Image (cartoon, rainbow, N blue to C red; front, side):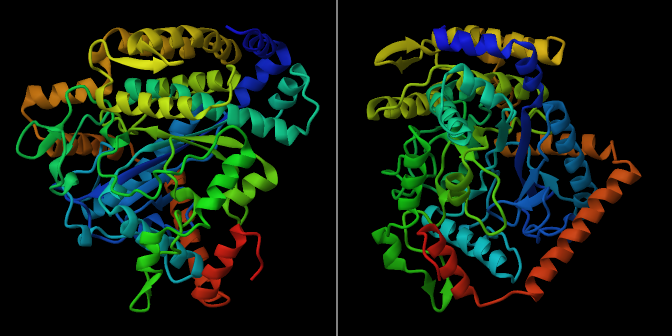
Length: 529
């Protein structure tokens, strides 16, 4: 434990700072596919009863019309965040039951139709709605639709704004408060890159998939049955390079050494042409097929395990918000949906994530050079494909180290933070969550990925049948607990309001779509159109 880490911990243990630890904010975005009663991808439109996918703040769609995304408000207690997520699920099922549709329980999709029959999400006739749809058409062109049907959980986390000035004073930093906060969040992101392999080992839950996902392409997976492929020691095939058929992002490695270099690398990517995309163009037969022919259409196209974020204003791009006002929170993007859990995540996992992210924020975080950056990627990819292999070795500071040894050392280093959070919140839930994860390190059979694979093998069950069995069980659990009349009414009113907001956008739309896209593109270059 370094001197600076110890000083930061000591500060957080004092009265004023300790109470601020209870004011960290948590939000969850949970994606899930709508499927029919036999596990096929739903071909129906986004249900109107759920509101407008464009303007409903809690229920939208991600890539596909069938890929729902549930978004909670930001809450100070992760237990409340999960309660919010639970209510969204219960409302959704009150409407999906009418169409005999289910929410698919794991991250990896089941049997998919032909690429042409995977419906791309639609958001209406407003310019912003069209932009969202064309962006997704571009994703289909660049990466294929199949990869976009993978679902995950994003965990948003921020420390109390009032905590940063205390840390800044402790460290004798005399710069602006905004720059200090951004610098510390970027340092957190670097540490996350160093240690995120641990999350894959502990919470990865996708060691198997339906063979239709690979579309007949060559692979190195093993066959479990006629329709199921797997890797024996995999933790998260979702986060592996399977299905990733695009090379444009291969050379894009945004630097997490400071906010300016990070935003500049993304700005360059959204404004630099990529020859294969240029050959296609932005339109075919007069129809838009992608927003532009650059490395990235928009900055959110960059696939990363974590993103520094700032809430945007209406019409503002993510990079613009970061440059103007700095980093406000981080979005953890590498979490699998646990198929055994109705919400895909539980409070023990959320508590551990709080400990993990806070450790990343407080631990020393040297700048990442090229070798260490690639080493972080290698450790991550090794863990997602072979994380449970006995004796598996990763690389730390250029030296081999057994995964279980390093994991145990990290969990031991987390212990003071878990104890600190328990002091702040009362009880022992954070330390208990930490102990639960140590159990998985000691015994790999306790990990979700091992449990999924063991159950598939023991029951002689296909991935599709396994996923559908749990999808039905979760559906029954949600439907058995209907919302109160007041809660149901509130969600229905939110849905009605969102539909009205979309209609208003479409009736008062100024300008044509081509002009709108040109202005959107120019905004990232600092141009006026």
